[in-house]
Amino acid sequence: MKVKSWGKLVGAIALCEGAGIIGSLFTVSSIQNWYAFLNKPSFSPPNYLFGPVWTILYVLMGIAFYLVRKNKFAVKLFLVHLFFNAVWSIIFFGLHDIALALVDILVMWGMIIAMILKFYPIKKTASYLLLPYIMWVTLATVLNYAVWVLN
Image 1 (cartoon, rainbow, N blue to C red):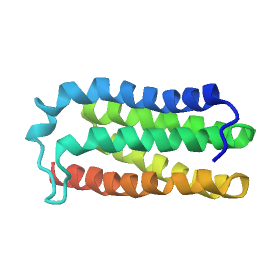
Image 2: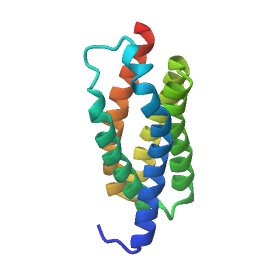
Image 3: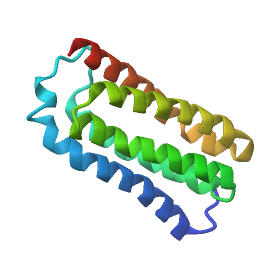
């Protein structure tokens, strides 16, 4: 990958990491006093795994965003998706609304699929960079559903 503007690349990654930071503000305070007491399925990953995984995913998302930044529709799709990404933590951990969080993550999942499909003809690498993201969000969606059912 040839980087034409390091500033734009860093900015794209920072934008994505910023969405993660917004979400983490609501997540951190709820892990010990709310989330810990929820019934969770046996396949629930350990809590310490979420931070590093999301940090890596936000970097990959930022690079993908940088690669498609000249396509107006791709940029709009990405930014709307990023909104749903950031508000999921607010809904789930901040509002403790597991059902509404499930609706949000289903919308986000669909938007990630749309981005993968839209980014492919623009820049294949951008599309490929989103594959770990869709895999993780698929797991997170199933986990969100299971937590909703179990609680």
